[in-house]
Image (cartoon, rainbow, N blue to C red; front, side, top):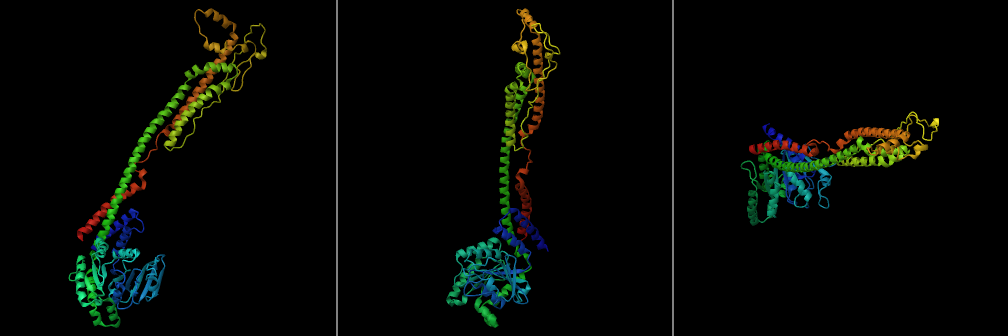
Length: 566
């Protein structure tokens, strides 16, 4: 119970960390982590038998089982990882990668699914193979695992490497005729010791095929190999055994106990039983592998943490740079927008409008040319200011990615209303005007005018234009009084036009300034960047970093706990 508590937390953290690392499905680290976690939750004691092709692995297992359970031949045969488990009768299950399960009595089905094809390759549609056998040793909670031969295909080597991680005892089969090279020993060390696998037993086969004088030399070399791998086995148990597999199988099939004894099988079986008895319920033999995988996961998570930190820091710098650019742009756009609006306001300021346009408008009204005057004088200026403001609004919307509120719209449809005197004085030719000429409070809308006859039609500069431009000084005062008296009628008409021009410009100024103020309030936000939360821009990266920061603390704590206790 205590051992279970010691590893369960670590397993939970490992699974959670693997999920955060977003590893590819075929990633070795991901596969190892899933395998080691499942392995710790499997109470069965697994003995894996592996080695290069044609070293007699399946023959050795058949000898241990006492029958021809697994396929053996003169050519490499095993093409899948075959689990041999206890069952009341000989039975085989084939689990395919698509989820289908094929079940048959006996083991003949192995020749269809568990041997290599003509190209000496494994079947890609086979997920696992299970053989059930009535064997007293298996009944104690032990499983044998027959693995494909190594040093032939990369796929086979990868499968073997994965399966060895989840075996409690590793039986490495050697060929006495061609012992391991230095390169093979280093490869085995990478596969086993570097992954925390220290329960290794060497079984040398084919010693019976050597001459007596060669056997002693082979034993010396074998002892060197065995001693180079310091196995963690029960006290008094060797990690090196000689078993002549094929003679041992033949002796077992015949029931010849003495012959089996000579092959070395009995000594090896005894050692296996002792090892299983001592280790079967001791999970501590699995902890070095769990720690090894855990440290690799921790290192990968730490590297991922650093990558995320650097990525987020780079994003922060990019954001700060963007903010700096936005601030400069905001200042520039606001200044430009404010300047354009201020210039338009200045133009719309009534004293400026009167100073610039009142005289021209009064003359235009007198000449029935209001529409033309407005088209030539007011509309171009308004369009110019509107375009200047719209350019800055558009820049702000595009730069800060905001919806454009639309263009400024100034109403140019207002009319100029002219009110004439209620009764016209007599003209200079001493004849009364026609009654129809008496015009009272006549409105001159845009596009409409009045036609004037008599003296009024002949006076252009002497009427409205004259009144606005007249200057009085003492030297010419008497002459001007005489002229004003003579043209009194024209002066009254001119004053009406002057008053109409002032009213029009006043109304135009007031309504346009109101529209401009409302538009200014609506577009002020277009010159400012959007408000973004500090960490929202980093999204899942920031969230993942937070999770990694938290889980790494607990993961390191659990790994150190395992390291300290075991």
